[in-house]
Length: 69
Image (cartoon, rainbow, N blue to C red):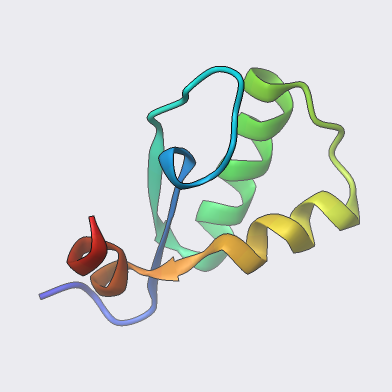
């Protein structure tokens, strides 16, 4: 059973010219920080409040992601 409050974001679920396969899971703030770093370094995005809000909207509960993967 997944820990309560854990979130996941999976690059495979979103359009990318790199066909990225990275998935990140952990507590929401950890995932958001790691996903922002990844978006900037691997995909060329600029770290901004707008990017962080967009990434936050992509977060799913870890159990929900496992069920749909």
